[in-house]
Image (cartoon, rainbow over all chains, first blue to last red; front, side, top):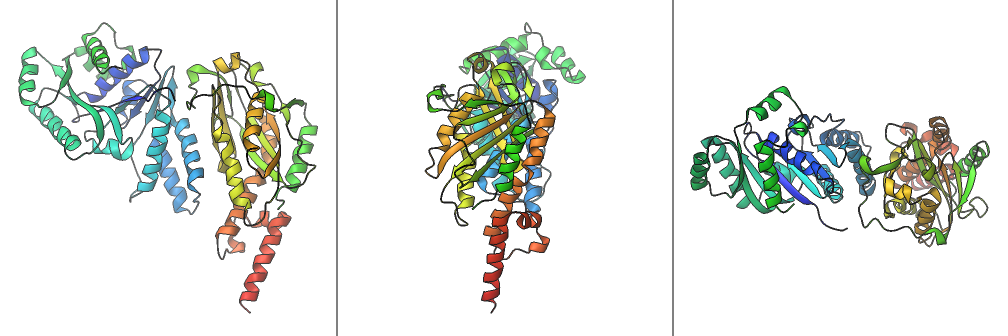
Length: 255
Length: 244
């Protein structure tokens, strides 16, 4: 293997624009034809797929639930055969577009604890990710589900927040969970502020939030419009400030 | 133990009935570079695709201890070769026929699993394989670059043969590849439909202490395949003796 993929996980309170930021990051990464990009939509609402204008065929949880049902029916098999079957199904669940592949985790439906199945799926996602240069995970609000359902370790954990006190508080809680409770292993952690109206808001937050601010995106009617109309962020104009900011953040992360 | 006597005969008959060309898998054709562990070919980089999940596909491995059923290194190809199919997604059939020794009731299933894993150990630049033995499906992609560099079924079979022959109980390996049409692949599916079931029946017989044959989904296979019939009879006799 030439080199390990760089993994980025984004999380943050619902409604702060996390998925729009993820989609803009994916757009920027996928524009670089030298990179193979794997985008993982780990939000049960599969918002990233919509934001990228990509229709998904099936989710990881569809595969998981099929496997659980077959185990329940007594159609068990040895671990190697199961891993190969999951690998096949997972590759089939990828939606590809040029140098970008998208995998949706989906919503778990089966009740009960199936830690073994989750663990097998995590192993397969990990193996699949090795074939890419960058893996971007659009997570839920909490970080623990990234660990539980997608990946144990990420390179860059990015918390998205708007400028509201609630958003910043949630960001701090996520930071605490990641740092002190070891909800997910990471190498660096930072925050992107979204819907910022002026520099003063950023300065105020910088004073109160003990998180490295990687960059900030302005309040942007066009982002709102894309979001509202369900348009693909792949077509978001390159010259927009948000695109420039995201590009700079990615460069600062040395990707 | 011989589980596939009929299947060997049916496959030979299938090949004879088709427009087939014969290639050779050999040691000197093993010069393809390594993929260095990267085993994914994305659609953007894809030159040829074989057995996409939405197309017909069948893949299986059968073995025999007899000396005269497997012609080592022989590759039968029905349909176009990879280099003749640039830009296409084709239905795919593949059967690996191996001549082995030392297979008995105790060891057969474990050796089958070892042989089954061989295809995943290939590390050829620009060749991706995804396969599920229980579905008897195999899905592969060959990159544009590999197609340009003349990757072929001969190269694939040579690399596979080399890996199979690393097992001390495998002495000869023959291949059948089908890319001609969905109908031809479907016909091969029919010919090999009981391969997976015979293996599952063997596994079930070995792993379950007291299987109920009347309720078993593989009952028909056990009645068809002589070796399984023999195993079943021996087990029933042992059970009767134990019960006095």
